Image (cartoon, rainbow over all chains, first blue to last red; front, side, top):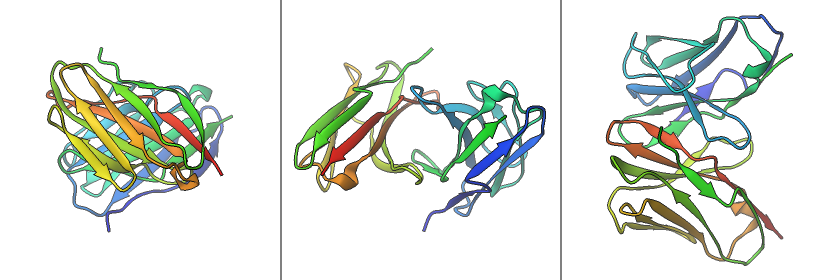
Length: 110
Length: 111
């Protein structure tokens, strides 16, 4: 059974903290993605990766960085969290067309 | 900038009613259209992937059609049930390998 897991379902952090969101997939997929979802907006792509140690900026990369040291793991990093980064964060992986999503992390920055 | 739009934004229907909603997308450089169902506290789950103009897909009481020339897709739910309550997302994949999601349609089925 296809599985994408995210390290936390809910997270509360303070402004200025460094935040790590972890995503792991067990399908040996090469492609992995980080999105954020906000009310009234679609899923917006932050970063994606086509292979280990490769990363590409999505539509809204500002304030974020990523790390892909192993094929199964794709980490999203908020270097200095800000209140406008309060959101639902979704990780996904894909082989070709269909994307498989994790359950999401709801991050609140106070 | 490519935009994918969905309407309506939200929908409340009675159990047993049939319903449909729309996804519109840019028809240029089209590659594929995805529909996902996203239930509260769960991961978005793929319903359909469609690539050809005129494609129709069906899964149980849910079906979808695709018109790539005019840039729209319809999702139909026949005889809505409370378990159909979810946000339905569509996403357009372009030939440049970019995937753009719509804002979703939130469906509530009232028992």
